[in-house]
View 1 (cartoon, rainbow, N blue to C red):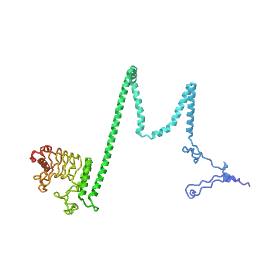
View 2: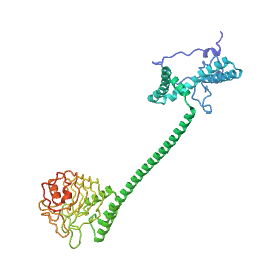
View 3: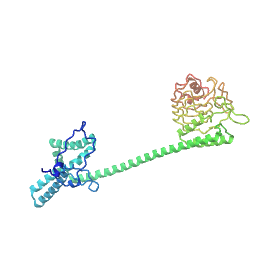
Length: 437
């Protein structure tokens, strides 16, 4: 009996096993590879599949497989393009029309095929609006040229151009060139002006930042000067003098907004309010309600503004709740100011401009309007009747002020004089002129 060759048993195909079920071998280890001595036998080796073409390999990287690195279609198209260019050169050299035509057509078609993928990538990066513009602009130009050709405008233009005198056109060109140079000069002037405006705005912004830093430093310095370690008010005469000097310096250099910030800070911190003092120690007395007690007759202010705001520009600023009592505001500009509940009692508003200001509940006097009178140099103020507690409003301008109360209007008309009475909204015909001039 003849035994089978040793290769015949190994040549039997493997029995197929279902993927699922009890006989599944999906969890079993993969069969071991063929022995080394049989790997070279083509009869026993499984059929090899063609490797997939890979276009993303880098030939310079030794770690990549030496599979196909270049698309054969691209390579063949490149070769065809080169051959077509050579044919065009040969046709031009020999004067052959057909060689040149054939090479040109082949080179054009194949080159467009090579360019198209890159063109698609570029178009893909554009938005739909940009893509439409890319088509619309040449379309508009071609359409205009077609309309001109149909209507005969292009022929009229050509006829007109042939009849022109080119010497006149040369002179006209020189004239237009001169106008262009003038236009360029104006354009340079405009650019220089814009640079000046930008530089001015930047300088103004930098000045505002510097001013705000100076005001912040002033706030900190005043706080440290008049407060002790426990946060209580401790202002000795020399400290009050230094505080007033600092205030006068910053009010003299700040713009209207900066001045208003300083006045609001001093008012809200009670540094402008006359405070009751201990007759022996000179310290401010607490009122028992968490603040300091006011004394309008004999009290002492930490900072006395005096004439610091005389002729000051405070137009359009916010001075709400500010204590400007007894301040010298002669010829001050308070137009369009927010003066809600501002205390002007015994202030000098002589020839001040308050046009368009908001005077809601602004205090011009104490006591009753019937007995209130402006301050005098020698008169002692009576805060009960209002005598000598009122502001000096002679010559002031109250044109366009709003939210003016009846008592305010009566006081201004009575003690403002003829010039002031002419500016009060609603007129002063029903109120006598107690000033007499």
